[in-house]
Image 1 (tube, rainbow, N blue to C red):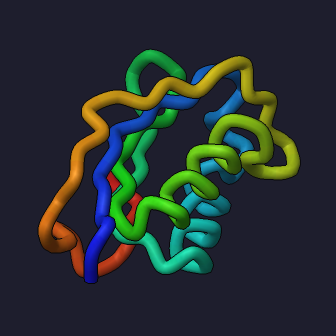
Image 2: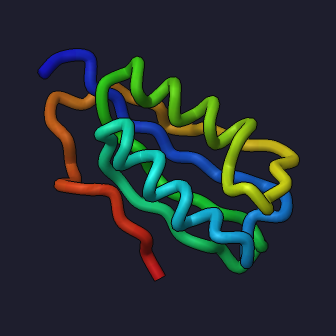
Image 3: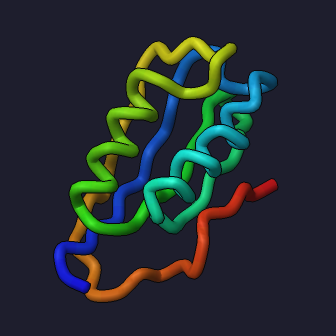
Length: 96
């Protein structure tokens, strides 16, 4: 596989208590991405996604604009985007 990237993200808004992590895991799995998602003490959701650049870009757009049906996304930030030679996770999981 070539063109693999990893990116950290944080989503701000009404993203806790609205099944945001569940929908994030479903969307990432649908796009065949790996990584994780978790709630933060700052009332945000953060995580990391890895996979082919095109799929990661689709996930970034989803995190920026779609989310779960009852969520309200004010903004999403993306940091530490880097190329990876191999995926560092075997699946996409919710961390607690």
